[in-house]
Amino acid sequence: MKLLRKRMTRMMNKPKVMALIVLSALVLSLFAGSYFTKAKAVDLSSKISLTVKMPQNFTASDKDRVLIDIYKIADAEPVSGYDTYSLTLLDAYKSLDLTKTNKTGSTDWETISADAANIALKKGALQTPDVKGVALETAEDLTTVGPGLFLVVAHGTDSDYIRYPEKEGDLIETIASGEKVYYHFNPQLICIPDRFDEATGTSNTANNNIPWQYDAVLNLKASVEQKLGDVQIVKKLIAPEGVQVKPCTVIFNVVGVFNGQTVYEKEHAINFNGNSSDSILIKDLPCDTIVTVTEVYPGAGYAPTNPSTGVLVGTIGPETTITLSFENTLKTRIFGVGIINHFEYKNSEWQLTTPDKD
Image 1 (cartoon, one colour):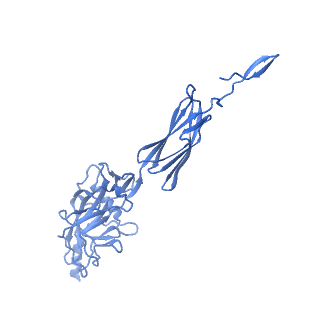
Image 2: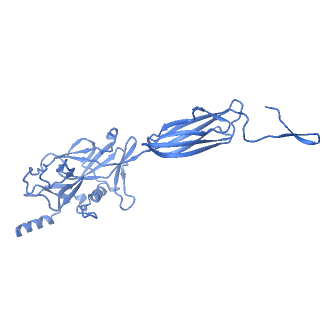
Image 3: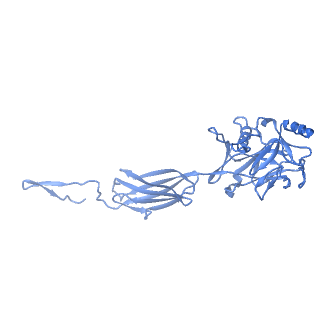
């Protein structure tokens, strides 16, 4: 027993961390594993690969808009007599603390992943990824890189894809621009070889009931931000030839519905005072919002002519402006802006008379 305690003490003093993965995150401990009895012992000389799967909330048409960079954080090294391996941090990541815990006492892999990302993606001093520009759903051979702990960074095709924390407590993230949304990713850690139990959805390198998996799979996670767009309502007044456009006020009711929910509802007015056209710009409505514009008041003396119903419907596009145009035609020349009274002095008094028509 004394010999065993001395051996364990020497192992715990080594700068190595045994690999465990719990739930969708990693759990690393200073010593883990047991003598293999049910599964073949880990073979660190075996070929390895990584396939990064699309998130569940991902649009398949955006697949080619996301690329994967892979950074090796630590080397995997065998542990004599045990069906597991230890991790030795690479020089660039020596400051990484793999033993951080959260308030519940569990390993805080969200923070550890962010710490690793802050090193790999440090502003002004980016590390070079071991593998760059991997496509989603593609098995990337990592045999020449070698087994160990990896940081997986998903991002878009634009060069400006890193969003650094703006305040304490925020995590570093990367961005990809989809057709209609922005995808926000937090870099994720994974150990390869892996032991993933599909039945429970957990990974644990100490679970020797599960065979070692050398072709690892990482389920990418993303939050989605809908892109925005604008709508411009254009109004044109038309008067008969030789007749001046009359002053008036036009009122529109605007309703925007996104995914079955009303996200915008407001009345807008345009005041005309001699001008024949004007417009309203409504900004930052979610892409795919269906906008219904109803002209509830066409202006005194005017009638809607295009469209004759006074209603137009449009769909907001991503980071673009759609235009809905209305035309109203002046129908009456007697306009209710003012009254002209004509008086004549007859029979020792002023009498109201009707002026001649134009």
